[in-house]
Length: 435
Length: 94
Image (tube, rainbow over all chains, first blue to last red; front, side, top):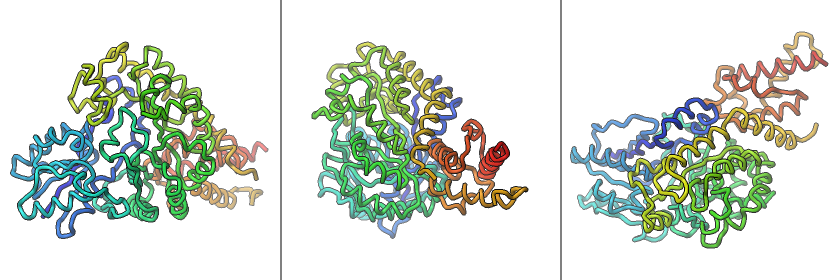
């Protein structure tokens, strides 16, 4: 059987023409987008879960052209919410020719009933148990409409096979994403991770992750490795094992983390030694009041006062912080844009991703804003987090878009870049041992 | 070596030393540093890594490097040529 796996084209920056023009003319933004992209681990993992008697082709529409007329027996698509519209278009094209289409990934997991209207089979949750089962059913002519991970025991990540990175070896990716852990303990209101991965924190074995990195380096010898994990350093025992494995692999890498790593100086030293160059941290807001109701235990609110100190601790170890902020949160007013700019510049933050509050399906935020009638669009192609799809009490949609652009223009200006470069040169001077 | 009048022998040693530093920071084998290789696109050296490389070389080689000059550098060969040039300028200036 010939199986085609597809990652649909995504629009990662929204539809603002002014923003597109800015990106076009900003060297630093182009660099960031270049590295904040790349090959995700989902489809290579699904390919590895496929029995060897089937042939598998992966097409990543963000890098390759998809031939909707190609001759295959089965199509599997994985999509995030902002890719859903394109995923449904692809599904329609193949189904028109009588080809069975299955859809999984975040969007199908959080909105299976919607997905079921567009495809033949829907995967809800992790596919490690359900994809092989579906293939057996499909071969026997009895595929089901829905396969739910929750109908099976929890996925043991240590049993996940080596992803089939070889299937995309011809594509030049600047970053290849590897997954070491699943889950995050923080349960932020806007996040869909608890719905997708459940509440338990799990990980692969350190040796398994090392084998995956070696596989990635086999095909993309100079690509950076990004860890797709929502919060990679939660289990410190596992992290220490990982660092030991990483010592013998020449590579540089990015990871996502919470800010708790800042208080572990030994960990920070080890991260830099083993090639970690950037940590992406969700600081979420420069307005303290926004953090109070973000997660049940006020985890981020309790750390807000020490954000600056923590950022300094991380960056002084030679690791750049790429901070994530959201504008349009409940306590924001017109000052949030300048306050965000000032915070990024004052703390010499290496980079920042600033987005507009977006009520992604599957999040508690979506339900709250639906209940109060404040969602202005459910056109999933607008759910990039760069387009306003909410009604804010004080800020209009235009003000959110304009303010967002103003932040980017400022923090990625040549002047800000020079300031950051000067700061990091000083940091690295201190890290170089004296002769 | 440092007193070699033409700099040829020195340049060979200097290049090796620079390669070792770049290799240690980028974690890329020095054998990859062929002159026509693109620094960003092919070696994946991003802006933070380039800051670390320049700062380290400044300290190791007792240089002051202008990052603006490196912004326009595209290839490994151009990168090493610029560094070697700055190194010799520094030595000539005493």
